Image (cartoon, rainbow, N blue to C red; front, side):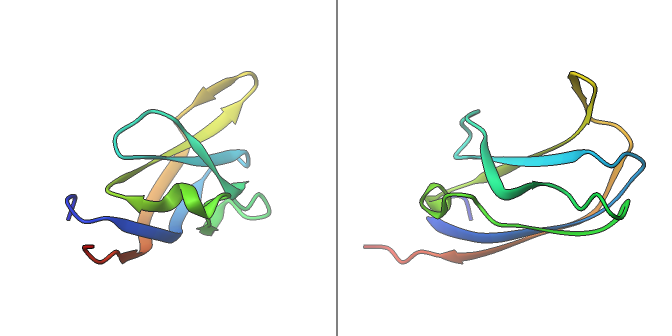
Length: 99
């Protein structure tokens, strides 16, 4: 429902990777300003798992209409999207009432 304001609490990503340095960020409402999560690096102790991501600043994920995610593997000084398999993405949010 893109016409309804929302508050995003958490995002769960189930993934499998062959590299240990994977980061995630988000942008809101179709704008390419990227924000960080509390823990932007997915679990490096396991190359397969579930990442629980919370917005670092909860007010940035409040009263939004849409959200997009960026998941990337950092290799050297470049950021390449490879060696990552996303199995599932779950977004925990609450729809805001119309005022």
